[in-house]
Length: 320
Length: 320
Image 1: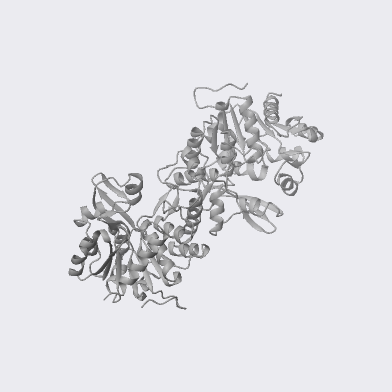
Image 2: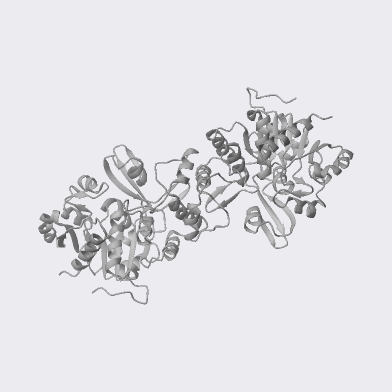
């Protein structure tokens, strides 16, 4: 079913992605499938301005991961980075709650300068992939402002304030995506969804990484109008998140962390779901929902495990 | 004549300053006079935005010099700084012609963030002096946009393009100060000029450092209405600039680099001029112009030499 790279821009695989889990999955995917035949549509709901810099954490994680620059243990930020600038900023009264390495700041400076001189995020991202020799297409969901706001018992917070500054400890009551209704998909996003033989929903937080992408009306529509398969990879293992608050959000906002609850988040377009062996008692419920499913070890502890998960997702897509 | 620090904000000495020579002079001055009794009005015509950062080179040089952070040989930038961020930016297509150290970027990030959230340059500068324990008042000439444009045979360039990017090699035909006519003095500037018993014009480029300050109409007026002495320190030694293009600009735009030509730049308010021994044949011409003058060794090769020049300027101010 899946073809290798074609001469024109059509790419056989399109991935919806956000966060470290998604970046690790895509890192596996580009090992088992031609990187130039993959487009990744990336969450921008986490983007924010900090210390005057325009920061796009999910795009950066993918840029660093696919560019071979990522910090291997963290899964985000750059390897062998220093924090000289941030320390100097802190000594002069700058905020220090968001870690910014010096190399990382170098990228943010270039992006911020380009955005201020009139470029849009998708252009800047394309330029970075070119500079870093990344063949996979990285597309921000939108070039417009879209901000994930987490509604908690302690108040409403932008994503980074909720996630980093307050350590995602607050009890979440809801999530909204400011600007999404008015946002247009970035160039190439809709055609990437429409033309892909396979759409993959990466193992990402459904509320904080995937929902902001789908909150853009034209993206929502394009995803739901697809005829070809859409394979999801569960973000939960044994009902628990590998990192982050996905399990707590699923409990609070979706009534549980079962495979069926995950599939329900993507109702109307998800045709397949890859889950962990630990959750295999949920396979029957998925089949009852009409979602084809398979279970395997989906913990992406190393490069081999990432490849295993990517391969399993591709195999599942051919299941009938 | 000169008093030590007083309880109220009045400061006995006010200095007009821009560039490394001025910073070295002020560094000497704060050794021989109470730092908290000195206000420095600083050129902002060199300020620019680069890699999205709001950079104020003359203010920064003084902040680093008086904060004990300056690179000792360069006389600008920070000691023991690295260029990790700039290298990363360059690898991603960022411009690299203006050297930005990591620690330096830390300061620029804080300033840029504060300016973007509504603070003005004088507020940010006051906050930095407080953070760095600097008792001397550093006042940008204006919080408004004022940009020195150098008109050359190769075209018109903003200051940093002329000075750094093109290495001040172009033949200068004129200099203009965009925005100056509409600029208001920053808070405290006029009172610092009016209340100071002594105004000092630091050894700075008359066209590129001092003239942009005086191009603000209210500053020009306040300087000319003073009754107390105004002492200049020549920026030339043996008719030559220690660094930079001051001598070439004096030749081209003022007909020569004599002490009298320097004094002519400050006609109408300069009462005294300290010159180098190498230029002492110009003393008579200064006296003829009604400018009291003295000659000494004014090369500020080390801390002791800076103190010597500062002391000589203070002594000259008491000459009748």
